[in-house]
Image (tube, rainbow, N blue to C red; front, top):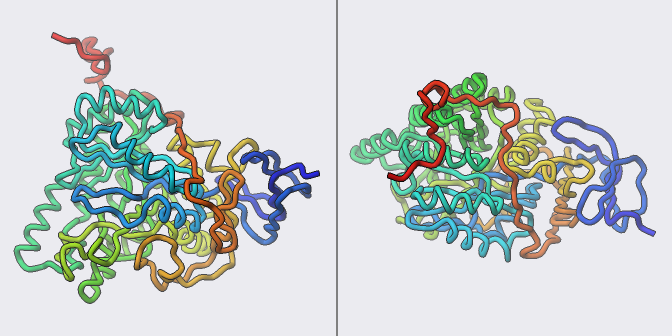
Length: 493
């Protein structure tokens, strides 16, 4: 009589801290036992010669999301989650975007309706906040937190999404009060608009000019300002898609100084360069993303930061817009760089690129790979230890990798709803061959096994501040500002 619903035998298990040989016994979607020579599985997987890793957690993706201009990304929650699963992911946390005039409750209803019937793997959302009215701050965000949405994102750029510094302080304080983590797209809006206007006025409209239109200085200034704002109110802040050495240095310095500052970077910034934008018109627009691709020197610096711990997260920033009139070419057959939907696909390639370029080339350890692609996201976004590790009692979210499988990337291998991949022609070593979510096959040997709506919404825990001391400046500390409690409810006069 079978003791377990599933047994995974003979593989090498790796977590963020340990690598060891063991079998895994799974019951009712949970890991029930880790031991040697397990038998008695209704389903038995022979993982001899393979790596058995925690399922990936993709924590930065734009799926079935309208941009501020109204453009819809090409992937819905079915194609997006399927593509994620083929890339070894068992959880996705895309964005649910509030545009101005929308209530947070409406946003959540819209995205629940989109994700619930379609996602094949487990999911949650980060709220994008662009309209932080008093009602949003005092009523709607606390309600979202109570439903397990414990992270949200703000923009320091884009006219229709930007929040001003005063609004950002209010958002940071609200997040801190409710145990949420704020994420920020950090670029100086004025510098970008100034550069765009000068380039366009002088006829520099080709895709390659997207790179200088978003100068490194714009990211560096915004990161510096974001650190100052978050540190002033002693709130946690995650800088997403960091693309510059100087910006990463600011994150590293803030962390060294004890501030609750975190960083993320993406595969495109460590494998592609601005030269990819300089392709025959209009093909360069496929590589328009913000922040933009940089240069080889920056790539080397970002690898150093990844190795040193500046970045806690490795995310795709999957923002798929097809190379046709529904996406990149919606403003004509050869649009100016500032008329192009910003973003590139990559959800399926996120983990394989880091495994190949990082683990196989000796840049990072296998355990750091697990941390960057799964465990750190689980901890930062309130899912650990249910997700992000292989341990007794954790969800049986597992990706089995063939570390020796060699693959040449083509769009025909991808499972998203795109017509190109920016990583076309890249040679990859190492590939996830089986993906299991809560003890159920999602992908096995190149075949999709899951059905629409099989994924579950994840109610997440608050952000864990353990290891960080309270660090209010004297102007906000009642002990040194003559007793003014600036975080209590304001009195009505």
